[in-house]
Length: 99
Image: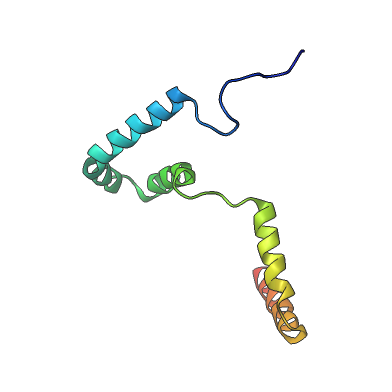
């Protein structure tokens, strides 16, 4: 049958070569962390920010907008009417201050 897969890796499992490369990179970074930190300190602040922004996704798992929306919705659902009014007033005042 066309399109029917009958083997291979399980969905979500890493390719063996990908895993080997990640392990080698991790070893390289761990062995040179002091040098990397010193080199990082010599960069201009703007360049450091660019580098951090580029690589932080490998350290911190990104939140999907759906996760954030669900978390915010869950927190809002627990607020009383008075708390919601206060929150709305703060948002309006912050918005006005930024305009």
